[in-house]
Length: 275
Image (cartoon, rainbow, N blue to C red; front, side, top):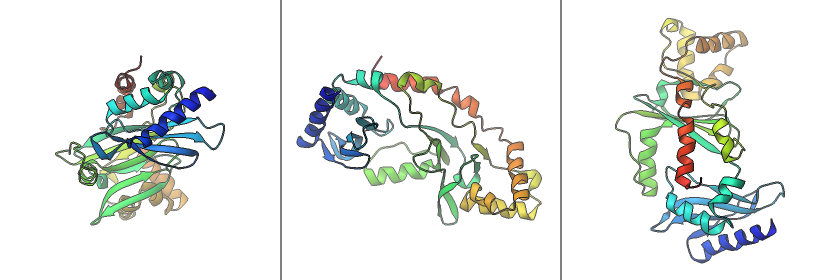
């Protein structure tokens, strides 16, 4: 209501006034603030936006990464700025984004072939002839997929932002899917498994004698599987898609991965300390 909006507006502005954050403006919100960790002024902790341009948009939006953010700062900020503190998050909050991730140990991104039905490649980054990251789908859409070199990413984040993220000792590929559940916290546990449709493979020994297949595999490593498939005629494309579906990885088990989802949701609940 208007009372809660006025209270939130005043509290958020106090963050900037007391040098705990910096102003930030981006549509669809008129106002925002970047909150930094108290002892590390260069380390972003969370983003808060409010006062939306469109009436149908939720009045307040909060964005933070539990892997990087100082959770004590997140809790303290929300308890101080929201009228009913973290109870508002639990009772009124709508989760618009949740990133689910799994690490493949001993695998490099350039060793993978990835395919997600109805999505196309949106970004590929290579270095020295080797694939380092692959994005499937578009930012802002449900189940946007990021596949990247976790070891390299951790090293770059530590160097750029002065973090102390653990660096994998061996080659590790991070599979990250950005979900847009748009539901309350109580319904989060029931969202569909976003990894279910993702097809991953590393070897197709029975087809490697075919010259076109080998050429296709090399092309897919550099431009991504969806784009490589679009280069084929419809008949060959359908045949190659069928091959991927008919030879699933024995090590890629989306259903087993998703069995951990209830404990992940409960972990977030405990981290934010609301019942």
